[in-house]
Length: 210
Image (cartoon, rainbow, N blue to C red; front, side, top):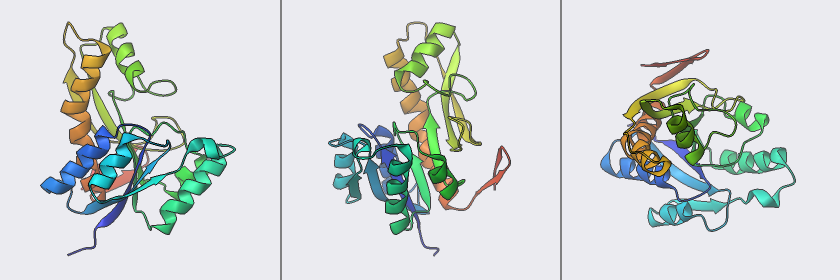
């Protein structure tokens, strides 16, 4: 049996998407890779507890300890390279990484975004802001997108998308929850498994699933 790919999950908060990945490992949805380290940009993030509960190495690398984006990205890159990480998953990671980091892990960083890219994405569209914008626009369908990360915010090649209906009485909070449950927590583990199983092929801006 092929050796499992090593996955690093980068977090800044509660880690619900991390939990979805860990649960998918337990249930056998993810069988070609395993989370070997969780890195938090903040002290005391609950995601670190989730990692420890799963016997996964939990590392805190506070952004405030570094002079600038480049210094932080270099430190993070060193930690991941030391552990021979194959795939980097951004799961509610609130730091924009330097281009040098993105180049070092080209087509090996994935992110989940709580909308159907190219709608409601890019600079400033994160967390509840995305759902507020969708409701303000009056769209009837939203969803989530898993994509590779490049130097353009939310601009990398799209791996998977799933649509979620908007209900007439939705608030940003109820919509955020539904998008997580129906789309994010399903797509992210699927994408991790596809990558680790060697089934993703990137051709320019197109991702083909083999």
